[in-house]
Length: 283
Length: 283
Image (tube, chains in turn yellow, red):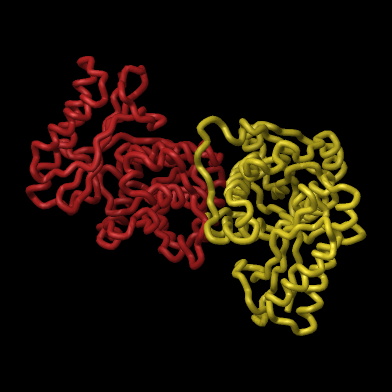
């Protein structure tokens, strides 16, 4: 596995791969890898000749007061995991490489970036779209794989690819969960034993919502109420939001009777740890 | 000369050119071509194997009330001019191709887009950066040629290329002028005979400023005063701004004694027609 930390070196290597007819698959990550990330890497391997995994804890997508500084990092462990997955290139640029002095050009996804997560993290998706756009231009992938856990992120990236004419395919891979249903997340290590014990309530609540829809409930308010009631049963949980949206456009739904896939998503704080989860229900 | 109006067809053809080892040179224009544009095309031919000229009157860079609707167009004349210049591809996408329904992702150059032109045309450079970014992703050029007349535009594009890691070279070609010094512009056709007669005052004023600097004047206010006084000598002229900036960073200068190149730029209205011009003075 090649390890590259320079933007221009990565760009040159990507050009060479392309010129020799290789299909490049990109998996952008912030490191501290878990099985969820590795499932994306495996998906990328299936559809490309050379997998590039980027590890970059992107300061532009954290607001002041969020967990940028303490975000968990373990680059040596990440390296050995990626090595065993047959990754061709680990791209680990420094902050100064990605955001040099006087950096001032941003990619801004308007509209869909201000709902859900964007309501709570106002500059988050500006940071995500900008760094992902940069990674696309540096790594020049034919396909990039994102996780369904960040549901809004993958919708915003798809919109960016369409709007700005990035010539590549976006693949969204399913959420990987612990045995008890907790979605894998690098942030799970922040949880106290009690919080960890309560956290699987998120998926249980989402499953209740799915069951409700399948038994004929179409009122978004009723679905949200059921999810919130379930989560409130755990005293370490504090809800940021529970929402019902169109799974493609992110339009808010008041009734799910549209025949379109429904995204039920949530963000819940356990102490200082903010977790997100979601489920897509096919009606 | 190939004429392409579909984004995906252009993208496929550009991929083919790249795969066969051809260097692509792009000249983005809004059409109604004059010798200024043709000088950019010739520059592009010198440094590439296949020149792509785009003609697209970009709605996103016009504000309501500006001249989008009446912007001059003459596609048949443009075609025959480009044909004789040995252009490989004329790319003429429609608005619906470039900005499909629910388009919502913009490239925003912060900071330097709110001074000079940006102060008078607040969403102008957002529109410019977005459309140029899209053209780069569609045409995939190795180099793109812009005119020095839009001085701020070329600085913003260079900054965008650096910030977002577009892997291409930006070339800025000198202003082409009429015999009497008026900078060529598609908008010159709007001028009444009297306005046309007065308009060469812009370049005369810029030349006075250059001479002033060369005789030792370093006070930006004095230089601006001289330019404004000269222009006010013509009664059809109404000044939007005259400014002295660092030619690379666009930082406003109060004194030119820095050893760095100085950009003297201006925007002046003649009736309903707004003209821009500039000069770079090497100290």
